[in-house]
Amino acid sequence: MTTNQLPYRAPARTRNRFMTVLAAILWTITAQAVGLCLVVVLMIAVWGAAAEHPAEAGDFLLGVAGVLALAAAVLTAVWHALKLLRLGPATRWAVTGALACPGPVALALYVYLGQ
Image (cartoon, rainbow, N blue to C red):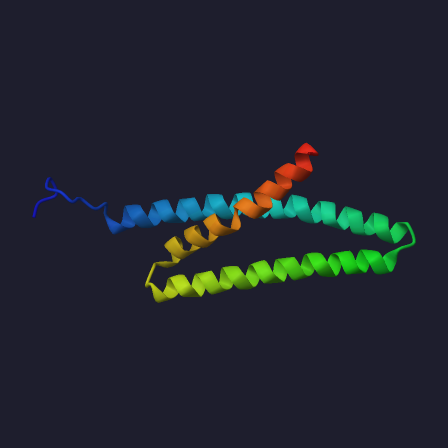
């Protein structure tokens, strides 16, 4: 079968490069959104502690840490599930990045736009 006949598949190097770039973009966007949200969370905690309510600020921070731990556990489970499908590391990073991206970005936009 020559390369002019269908179905044509891109070389593995090109597919791997695309997935690597896609994963890098998705995780960069996710990291920036999570960073913005964490700055807002820390500001709320500091204001709560300054208003003589340190226990409430601590409870708030524990809740946020719990959500982050749960998200990390889910993404780790997805990573290992994709490993069972024998996907390459770049593809696994891209898929987990696509799953991790919408939540923090939506929350960051909500916080940033003040809606």
